[in-house]
Length: 93
Image (cartoon, rainbow, N blue to C red; front, top):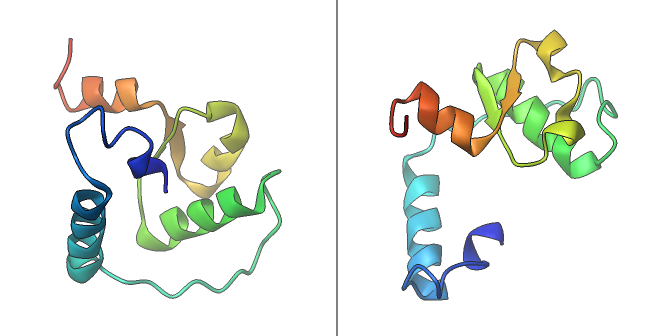
């Protein structure tokens, strides 16, 4: 899991990360995915994220790999970097 890559640097254990993920899953708005237009992106796991974003009506997919999500705007979703999201939320200047 990506979140566990920097757990130690953040002073967290893997169990801490698992607890956070479990909590998010427990309060999440679960969606059914129908796989109607795959494949679209080069990586099939990215297609899953795109389809989920479309089904959920998300405005953004937040990623460091913007090139991997080229063309998602035709689905009404924008791929943006974490830094851009923080600027949109006015967390950083």
